[in-house]
Image 1: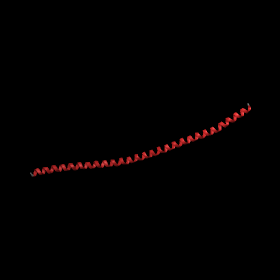
Image 2: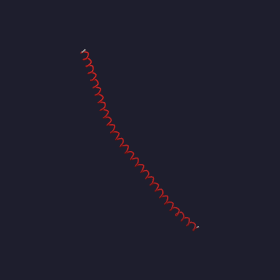
Image 3: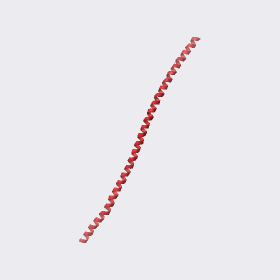
Image 4: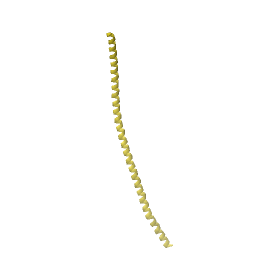
Length: 102
């Protein structure tokens, strides 16, 4: 009976040692996963900053494009206004001078 109890105790000790080993492996796995999680969080923050920077650049480019269209329109308007005021007067004078000569 004592031998039987000693056998059971040894069996339980082996099982306990096996559980301790599995527990240590699980702790190591948790530590590795926590380190990987920290790395991924840092990488996520970097990507998020790059996204914010890219969005800012796009917004600036959009504003610059709108400004460029506005200035181009203003130049076309200015040239059209100048040509619209000068050319008719130039041709009107020529016609008047031709009509009086003829």
